[in-house]
Length: 140
Image (cartoon, rainbow, N blue to C red):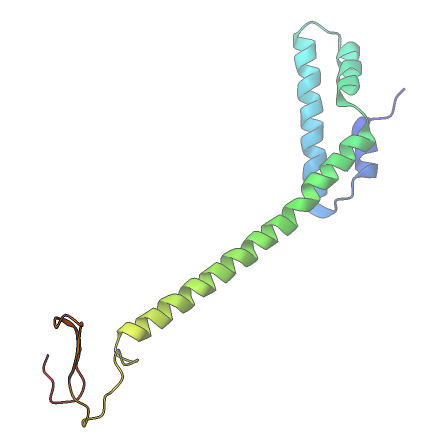
């Protein structure tokens, strides 16, 4: 009799712990469901078992694919978490620096010495382009 495909997959899996147990249980469930569907379609239990194993494919290939899928998940999740934490920290930093900048803790304008005066820049045509106000005496 042929070896149980689940046992063969289990030997080739490179996953440990709870995740390994979950993968094996899920595989077993899929094989049982396939066998059951074939029996409902009119196959004998022996025919259904043989067809299920045939459809399953090479256990070593299945184990390699399952290992690849389930081993990648953790590093991808870790990198997503690191990115999320970094973005949160940057957002908090930007929010904090903006809060201090607009709350008066950082002066909006540099203090100007009292001896400076108003300067009106003029365009060559004589129209005022801008007025720079400085000093305590300027009100404009």
